[in-house]
Length: 487
Image (cartoon, rainbow, N blue to C red; front, side, top):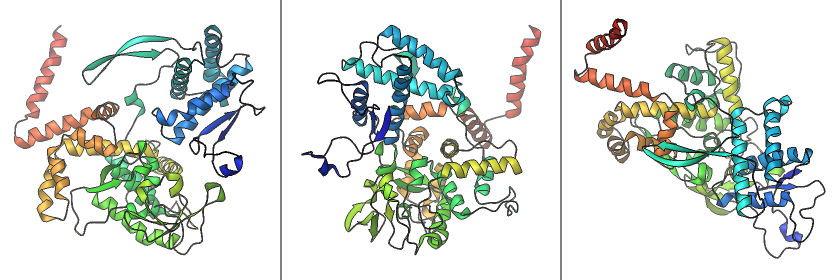
């Protein structure tokens, strides 16, 4: 089975009256004989899968990366069944036998074929969605999965759910999602800049583009942006630096074209992090990109030449367009008026730099090998978790409520300060992270160590107000455990 990706380029030469409705970049599965049906009323399984894929954008999966993941999951399953003479829409008995063999193959088969428990669970979820759709549409008479009924309790509300028994057990979420404590955060920030833990130059390391790496690292840690969000930002979308340093965070609008679900939101950034990004734009980035003759590779599509850019948009090939409407694929084809890519981060030669996962991985490996053996593996999303924990800590301890008092002495946005002083911390964090509901934020935070934050906030506030006698609390706790010895 062949996996390709649809492009409408040149569709007028296909002898079609109208432009195809298939979305750009949509995965398409084709059998090796290049046929989609065996007769007028007999579409092949590949054609059925393609129909399901085309409906994904309207059924809760708007991201092209999700389409590819879904297509590869079904493709791998269909190819495995074909090797064993089982059809994609075979009888339930044969499908269940195929699933059993497939589970063994992905758990203990050849090394290149093995799935981690989380990957296996993702694939089973995708296949379950596919078979439920196929049965509802009349293409399949059975599915290979067995379910058990369960009751999920979330935010005080219970509901009945179906649990797929084919999913392997995985560690509890709070074990697998980590964040960086302040000391490790500082190690990462310095490591990205090529510095040793004490802030001096790391003489054993000779990296390139360290100002870029440090500035974007600060941006990720201070805003909680996802990898795709900070990777495809444009310099004109970075907020202006206030004229006076302020403890109040600075509003950071996010364009809908690069956010998850394409929903506009506003996060925030600290003055220090914004200053570092601004310095990079005006100094190192300008020196790297200005005057270069970089153009996007032909496989990306035609270059999009930008003139007269401002914070809202610019002329793209002579037509005024807002930045918020541009997708990641379009943004990496933008060519700046002064030369080079229009993305915030550029590499030597003026091209766009997008390999941030490698930057964080190499930096954490170097810190672990040279300075701190306990330093964890860091990927870009761990910066988002770190932002979440630091922000919740500040909100719970009243950091930003106190900072609001500084508004009269600064040029900070009074409306933002008022918002911080009056809104529940979970609601603030929900908006900053771009979650659809506060329930998502609550579930997300359950995977992180929030108990410590609330405990320390309680103890700190109580001690400040003179309401908490920690010594008496220790004695009372000791007395509770003394009773165990008597029993």
